[in-house]
Image (cartoon, rainbow, N blue to C red; front, side, top):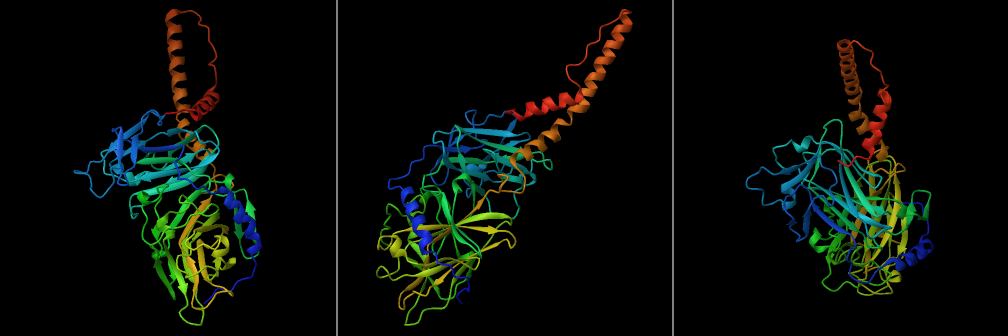
Length: 476
C-alpha cells in the first residue's frame, strides 16, 4: 500500500537545490591531490591489494610515534582468501599518531580504517579496545572488533581538512590498554562528493538547509539497488557498494533491471565519483503492465544509531522508460513525503539514462531504524515505469561534540587517557622525594655539618599537571 503522509509540495524548494548541484559537478576524470595508502606494520616498502592498489609501509614519514609494535600473521601459510594488507598490523599500548601532509586544503578527505584480527604472537586482537581521533573529530570510542563480524572491517569517514596536515591518533582504552590497525587510507574527495545543501525532512518540515560542509560524515550503508556488489576496483573512489536484498522490506510488485548501454553523465548531474556506472546501470523498479497503476511501494529499512542526524543520498537514473517524461513517483523517508512527483526527465534535460542524486537529512532520535520508500504518485502513468531507485547511501553526521560515537568530544578521551597514566607519577614523585630526603639526611649525619635545603621546583600536584601538559604534545 502507498504510505499515508502529510502532503508537502517540494518541486519549488528543489529547484534552487538542483541549480546549486549543477555548479558542483565535474566533467573530467578524478585524480585526488592527496592520496595516501598505508599498510600498517608492514616491513615491505610497497604492498599490492587485490584491487591492484599499492599501499606503502607506515614508516616515519607518516607514523610519528615510536612506541608501537609491528605484527605479522603467524598463520602458515597466510590465508589466500585475505588481502596481503591483513597479514600485518600496527599495535600500540600508548597513543599512536599518524600525520599526513594536506595539499588540497579546505576540502573534505576520505579516511578509511582497516581492521582484521590476525593471528599473532603479541596478543588476542579481539580483546583490543581503543579510540580513534582525527582532526578533532572522535571517530571511534571504546571500539572493539566483534567476533561475529565478517572480516575485514573497514570504517569510512569523510572529514574536513582545513590545515596543512591531517592527523589520526589511536588511543588505547583503559579496559584493554592496547589497540591495532591494519591499513589506513587518506584521499582528498572530489568537490562534488558532498554538497553544502540538502533537504531536511520530518513530519512537520520539508525545507532546504545549508552548512553541511562544516560537518564530518561516517558511511553507515551504501547499496547498489537492484544490482550486484561493486568492489573498489570498479569505483573511481575505491568504494564498496553492497546489494540491497538484505535491506528490502517490501518487494511486492518490484523487479530488477539492467541497462547495457552507456550512462550519460552531464554537467549538472551526478559524476562518476558520486556514483559509478555499475550503480546507475542497474535498478529496482515498479512497473505497470496494464491500465492500472500498482498501489505498492518499494521499502528498505536500515539500522542506525539513535541520537544523530543522517544524510540519505538517493541515486536515480531512468534506464527503463521507453521515452522521456513518462516516469513520475514519490519518495518517502520514515513515512514522511520527501519528494512529490519526482520527474527525472525535468532534472536531466529530457535525457534518458542520465544520473541524478538527491540528498535528504533526517533526525533519528528514538527508533534506531531509518525507512526509505518510493512508489507511484498521482501523476504516474499506466503501462509505464512508476518508480525507480539505483542506489542508496546513508551517512551519519557528527553531533555537536564533534563525535560519531557518543556524547563526548575528542578532548575527553585524551584527558581520560592522560589521567589514567599520569596518576602513577604521584607515587613515583613521592618515592623519589623520599629517596632524596634519606640521601641528604645520611649525608648530613656523616658530614656533621649543616646542609642547605632547597625547595623542589614544583610540588607533587604541579609536577603531575606539568607532566599532563607534556603528554598532550607527546608524539610517541
